Image (tube, rainbow, N blue to C red; front, side, top):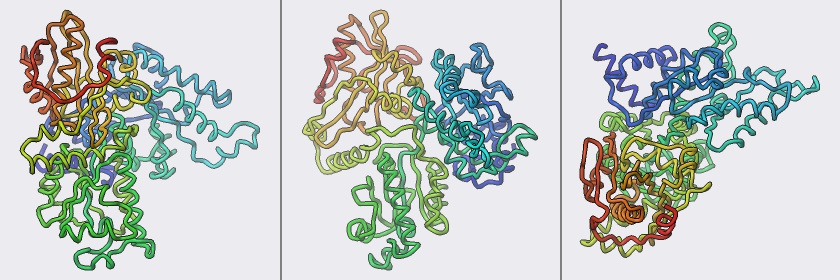
Length: 591
């Protein structure tokens, strides 16, 4: 490939502009990516995805691969042949199962309804039956819910004395979602609303090549499904960094003062800024961390947060407030280091094209969005990209902002006091052994999937596996006098030949530098001794971001025994820790 073509591919991969490309250009870019993936920087997650449908997927597969790669997921995709969805799912030796996928995505349309003329129960039973083989093989299932036909008379069948197909589909979707909590469901309602029915159901394309949607819809469909799949895998963005002037209010606070900024329902533009702030506030309530990066004097920048009556976002909602005249790329780096996250977890939005281009050049892994035009479009400019899509919202997500406020206090102690360990001990830290139940299962799966830095290897486990093997999962909640961090540590282990083997161990980056890892190994030593084990072993696999895990196990005292395996003696004395442990008997008695 010519150098300029490869550079163009790199640029598009690092920017959220795929949606704005001409559809033909988007498909060409995806094709170019597919042929040259070996020349592209590797991403942190690889999956095997089988897609089963009864329509033609030829034009969609590569754009979907491209969009997933943009989100850090390298997907090897197998697509069933046209019209074979049902037979593939019912045959344990089908090509789809021979592919050995990590995930199976089942994508029916309203044309695939089987029991419309029979009953709702028969419909539900039919589709549940299609899950059986996948579940028995412990394959993660993603079920697309049914779309509805867009022609008008589909809503008028009550005149024919039979149930409306629209109602049948709505009831089918509802019952399917309620029938199995281990299966991930994707609703198409928002996608169809944004595309419009003419692009979603293009009868000409369907009759021409058995593709039910228009060619023009492919970029947005690819973007939508990549967002949903990355949300399921825990790859949604974690942080929104935003500018202030002409971003969350109109005007420049340093020039026009508090009374001069445009914000409030008195004007159309002011109301648009209020709506945008409401959107940001909602993201924050869903666990997205907020930070400010503005070229302003801090005194001016903070004034509206405390004094303007129409401000929706409050100062306490902001985990890091950077208002100065320094390079914005440097300020974003400072925010990233404080939050202890990767650049690829950050979304930065600004109304200045110059600032945005500078950040793109300096920090290509940050998703940078230049907000253009009327502020009434700002929400759509961000939301259409699906960057913050999540499979579910846990208590830990909702309480995350408290964690960073606590970390800010700890950082101040590092700067102002000599004895950090004494301060941490004064917080009365407590590690609690938690049971895996209906309420914690989502968080356990989420933490294993989304953790990147403190993670021993790439092995992950779905809900079905966790429920069946929960006796081999140790789950820990951490809290101190300042905040409850929620469930932050998962250890998966098994015992074999007088060795306690750590299958995987993940820990949230929010509790780094709290000495929790020493306490965990101390607990494992007690468990190992109770089971007459002489040593603890673990497998470490180098991933893109898990250097902190390697440094931690070496600091604890694990010694490398082979290319991937480390060991520590159960009798090795670890450094004194000051973290109390609650419910330890659950491990020592049940374990």
